[in-house]
Length: 319
Ligand SMILES: Cc1cc2nc3c(=O)[nH]c(=O)nc-3n(C[C@H](O)[C@H](O)[C@H](O)COP(=O)(O)OP(=O)(O)OC[C@H]3O[C@@H](n4cnc5c(N)ncnc54)[C@H](O)[C@@H]3O)c2cc1C
Image 1 (cartoon, rainbow, N blue to C red):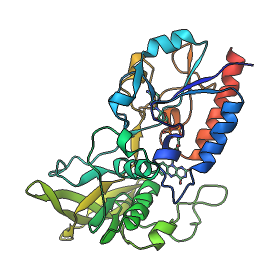
Image 2 (image 1 turned 60 degrees about the vertical axis):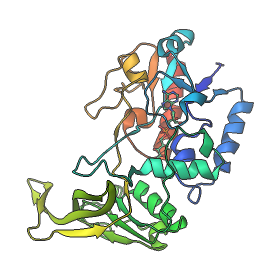
Image 3 (image 1 turned 180 degrees about the vertical axis):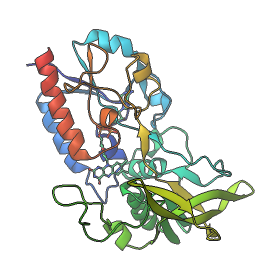
Image 4 (image 1 turned 135 degrees about the vertical axis):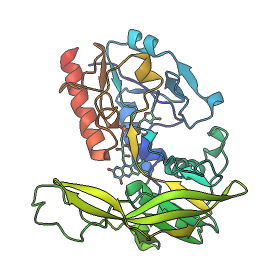
């Protein structure tokens, strides 16, 4: 057997399952139960311990110990990097600096931390509260849906979710026969609880009054097929305005956070900016492997679990 030590920057292990996905979608007792099994098997969890300095962490710097990346790699026979793909996509538009425009994960993570009594352990950021506000969520995926559900639970006055892509069909199209993954309309319980959903909408600017978000200028787009690919075209004269007191950017994640740990080790990246691995999960560093979102890009829980298991097996063979 082997001894296993997990270094976790946050106060508790669990990643986005604990501090991203809301409690109404995932009961955190399931994570605690699984962690307890791992601890009893002998895995040592060193929480509030960040490997390398990246500045992108949520927890208060005063409560986190930052340890040297090279020392970790030197001290252990093998190191597996599972730091997720946490660099968020942003909208660099006029007015982006306005008060009331936030990344979705700041909103969701604060709510999760407040719910489990860890609000005081976060770095010094203002609470983001949807109560009484006209909330606009930009991004039509799972993270956006979680923002809709959380905003409604906080008592938002209205919630509108806008998406750049066209509305997907309700049923599997003939061009996506089983077992291909069907790109069909997903309606979650959060949507059913109440929100307006708009598709094929481009965001053009954030309008501020005294530095605070007041509305968003939008326009409609059309998606036309060109050479087998969908291409976006603006619809002339379709400009409109949505009033907003709180805007949540839920447009996904671009890649792994590259500053800190990844840069410290000089790891090679793939064309999308995630950690490049061979089929054995081996990175470009002889003592370092990678798995989960950090090498695949933002994905799903099942893939992270399967990746972790396969990577452990690959490392075992390599040691
Ligand atoms: C809002 C939201 C909703 C989602 N909903 C779903 C869903 O419904 N279904 C689904 O299947 N998937 C969902 N996902 C995706 C899923 O959560 C991720 O694919 C999965 O959590 C990836 O696991 P991971 O272990 O690779 O990375 P993460 O979950 O991102 O975990 C990375 C961990 O590494 C820690 N860390 C990072 N850097 C360091 C460092 N330098 N030192 C020490 N620790 C560090 C982080 O604190 C974190 O605990 C959702 C994601 C989000 C954000």
